[in-house]
Image (cartoon, rainbow, N blue to C red; front, side, top):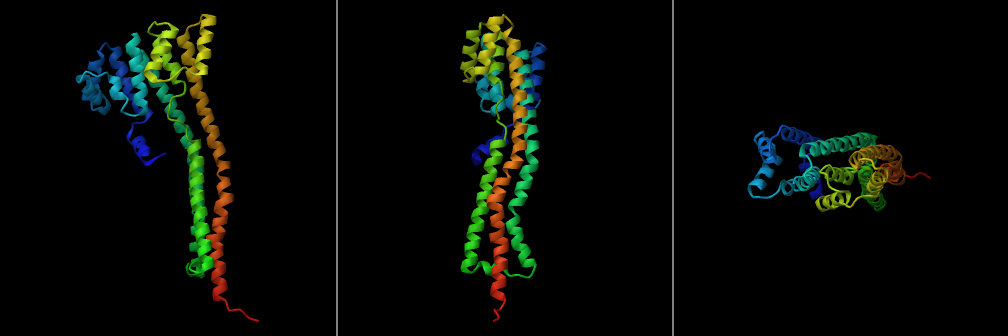
Length: 297
């Protein structure tokens, strides 16, 4: 992840905070308050996103255009808002459903990050072992820093430093691959369910959802819609149940990735950290001993 993307992610509100605001918005809408007035009540209460939406409403733009600029979680709320508006689906119920999906996705990411915390911390501590060994050699009375100034010591320094850098990058790549995605599993099913709750046909719901979100129905969603057609069962409930099952599956998969990370982090430890320990810790002590101990015949 680039520095700019990390800064944007840090500035964007997390899914749990977005879900709380959306829940309040849904309550206001369910109480019979008009959408524009509901946003203004939230803006008056101090919500920054609601203030941005109100500014766009004053300019004649739809709320989705402002929500798309407030981070991924708000963009998804904007998609649901746009779909519900186009097909005439109940806004309050649609927002409640997506707020629950946001909470589930946020909880899944929290579970994975919690599971990743211990192996990440262990990997960081082990990565500093070569430098700790260098200081330990000095504490034991050797002169490793002078030894590193010799040609052989310079080779140890360059090779050990390169291995430490490789360890850092390798570990970071392993941790990044274990991190959960920021999207909501089953979002396409949720959005199509919102469209169907407005009373439109399945082809029309797919068209509206794709136009708003840019997402084509996944194979899982297509299978659920096919089941609904063949069995005559309500597609809305089937889609929401499928989306919930996908979120649970993503949570389980994330925990398994986090558990597997502990074993995978042993690779950079064995391949890079231990050789760096020998080059930066043991090597300079041996060189120091050889240069300070006189040879006797």
